[in-house]
Image (cartoon, rainbow, N blue to C red; front, side):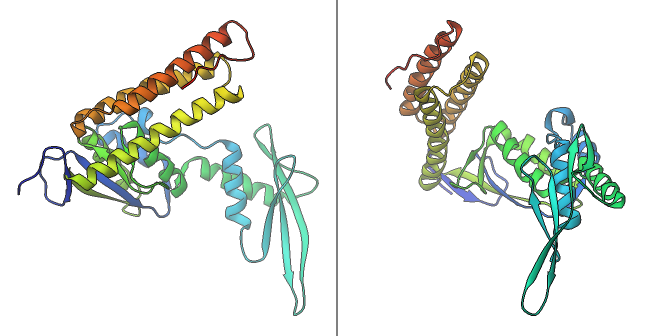
Length: 293
């Protein structure tokens, strides 16, 4: 097979490639400790790669929904935090709604807002503890996206779902996803389509990288324009993000075999804006200097 060095095609054979297009299908949940075991078994640092632990408030919310989200109940979020459990009773002509009880978290403890059965408080607490030790499909989806981004991947679709992973990161990606599949006992499946040089694929990858970069440029510029960029720490974090983005752009220049001068020039302009905003914040000026792009 003859290929142009700067183009890509999708193949399924095990050949030297520029990367892979990946996507996944997720189902169910599994113990967090199981993923730690399989990450370490794959030779990875589990502390570096494990998904972030959900907050207790999030576990509490998941517990309430797990126990009471059904055909006979509604769950309403309370203004001051917590949830009201609404029981629905249907007749031939009407549906009656009555608040059974309401609960919230206070200092890490599940409590009644006014009244709640003791059994309900115990059940919700036990279920929240379960979720604190469990990785659910939503966690896995967010984690896989974060892993893909950390490995230099880009989203090939506007709404996500399919990501391109560069060749140099494929070993780490395969180790991560193998650990995931093992931890979920095969309930989670990650697919991979090998990618070589071909014109349409280059266009898709370049478009994905450009979209990601321009969203960063636009976000920074808009926040500086509106004066909502934040203080020194927030600006410094944005500058670190800028450095990481530049490194990513450079790696794709090598991968694609072409200079991405439009992106690097735009990034330089944004870095100047961020530097000016940081200087203004250090001087205590509430109106950061705006440089024209």
